[in-house]
Length: 424
Ligand code: GDP
Image 1: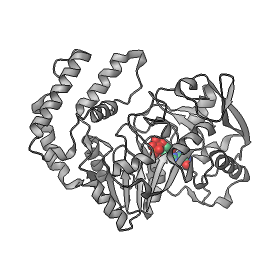
Image 2: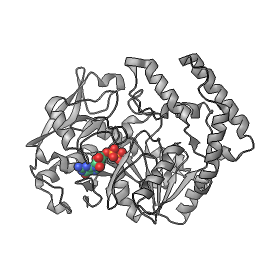
Image 3: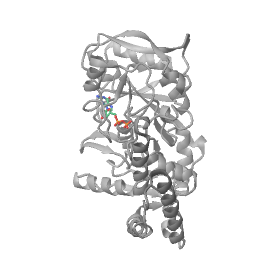
Image 4: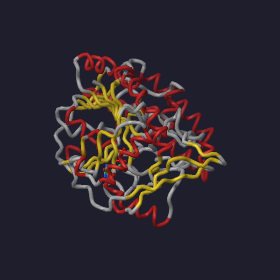
C-alpha cells in the first residue's frame, strides 16, 4: 500500500519525524520532490540528524530508500550525508536513486547566488541551493539526466549545457565563463562510477514493489502553500510538494496512493520571504520560537529564524484540501503547554470580507486573522504516550482542528523524539 506523508503549510511541519516514525513498518521510503534546500530534522536512538537529500527511512536497515525522478538531485550533498551517517554510527542504509532524476550541478548554485545579488532588495530569500535554476533548466529541457552519464552522447550534451549557461551568465551577470566543459566532464566522470551502484529504473522498481504488496511511504519536502501551482506564487518553491506529484515523480498510478497523511503543526511557521497572515512579532513571537521544535524554530538547513503565527485554519484547510488529506498528523502539540488561552485563526478579514477560503497571494498582505481562543492545558504533555492521558483541553484543541479541517488526527506528536508520538 502506498501512503504519502506531506506538509499542509509552508514547510517545517515535522514530516521527517513522522516519516522516521512510520518507516518502522515500511518496506520502501521514497523522497519525491525538492532538493537540498530544506532539511528534515530527525531525533532517534542514533542522535539528532538533519537530512537534506536522503529519505527519512535511512535509520531503518530493513527499509529501501528511493530518491525518485522529480527530486533535484545534488550528488555532493547525497554523498556527504551518506558519509555523515557512517561517521555517526548509523548502519549503512539501503539507498537507490532514480536514473531518471536530473543532476543539480554547482553552476545552478552559482546562478542562484548571482540572481539574488542582482535582485538586491527584491530578492526571494533563496537558500542558494540552486533549486530554481535547476527546475527552470528542467522545464527548458536543458538539464543532465543521471542516465545520460552512461550515454555515448554525454560530451555533446555537456557541451550544449555549458554553452547555454555561459551565454546566460554573460548576458545577465557579465560573467565571461561560468562553467567550463572540461571541469564539468571531469566532475561527471567521477559521479558516473560513484553513482552506478545506487541507480534504479524508478518507475519499474516502484510498480513491481506495488505488485508485491510492499508498504511504501512517499515523502515530500516543504508544504502545500509552497506548491508552484497552488501555493503563494511567486514565493512558492519551484516544484510541487503535493501528494499528487508523488505519483508522477515515482512513476506510479495516482490511484495507488491510498492514504495521505498531512502533517500539521500545532501553530504556524514560515521561513523566507512571502506573506504570512497573522505573523507574530516581539516577545510573543520570540517566546513561541524559543519553545518550538527540537531546539527552537530555526531553519534546519539554514539556521534562519522562522516566522511565527498561531494555528491558521484557513491556510491549513486549503493545504490539506490540496493534498487530499485522508488523515492528519498533528506535531509540536507539547510546545503550546505554556499558554493560558490559545489563539486560533478561524477566518481572514480580507478587505471588508470575512472569508474561510485562502485568498489569492496578492490579497494575503491585506488579510487579517480572525481569532477564536481555546483554553490552554498549562502542563507538560511531552511524556504522554496515550491519547487518553492527554488533558481535556488538549483533546479539545485536537478536536477543534479536526472539525475545522475536516479530517481525523490519527497521530499526535508531543516532542521531537521518535517515541514522543501518540497513535490514535
Ligand atoms: P520537516 O522538514 O517537515 O521535517 O520539519 P523540520 O525538521 O524542518 O522542522 C520541524 C521541527 O520540529 C524540528 O526541529 C523537529 O525536531 C521538531 N519536531 C517535530 N515534531 C515535534 C514535536 O511534536 N514537538 C517538538 N517540540 N518538536 C517537534
